[in-house]
Image 1 (cartoon, protein in one colour):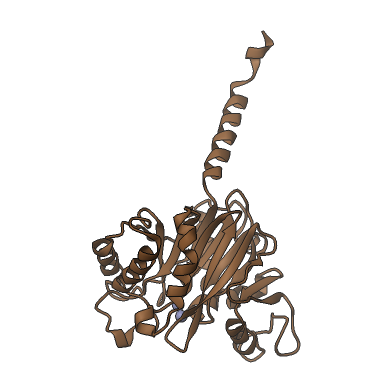
Image 2 (image 1 turned 180 degrees about the vertical axis):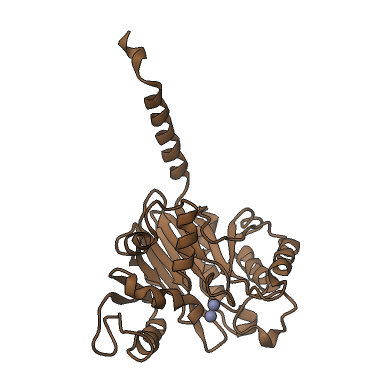
Length: 320
Ligand SMILES: [Zn+2]
Ligand SMILES: [Zn+2]
């Protein structure tokens, strides 16, 4: 009766591995937020590590904060390697939505300790990295374009609007869309694909009504079939100010009311109750005064579409 002699610990290990594999199969993406706010606190600015579920190959969605966020994630046991190893080996590249400092400061400051990798962005954004930040007067030129000498640690990859590009070293692909951010200022939304599932990350954006633009409307039209087919797993979108912020002082950002107005437009394209339960991750809250509590309260009050509103925390992984 040798059959019964399989050690219990082996059975337990087998079950653990099976259960873990199954729970990973249910998800398409894994996100580790490294920075979630939109100002003031320089140790917590827009930055999200994103990987295809079941893989360890991340892409950085913006890079306002790297070190402080990685430190929290490592202390929480999210990664078992030392912080610098996570930075150098697990982050395979960066997707930068727009070149405002709160989205790139971590990238610039950590560049001496980083490994060689790609920076993907639309040309308007790469131009600023090349001409303003990675220069010998403001820092060092770690890029492969711009002022000589070029240290060539970062390879700039010009994305093309609405065209899909593979994210090297990962199982993901990206399609960028233009956003209006305090017109004529620009920003980018990244639609990330893993197999046949998608995640949408928007950099800073104003509402179409305020920006006198149709960039969001065009983006909503594009993702409508993905929502109808339940292929879109989550939307990351900003809400910077509470509703008390006057229209002429929005500086290309959203309030809870403006977000819900945009979600209403999306809902009318997708059909009634199509957005119910859709995970919407709120990014870029500007933490002045009691803004944070106020924004959370206003989002709860106005969530008639029954979106699954999520407030991300530094170093706390999210699975979609
Ligand atoms: Zn901005
Ligand atoms: Zn910003």
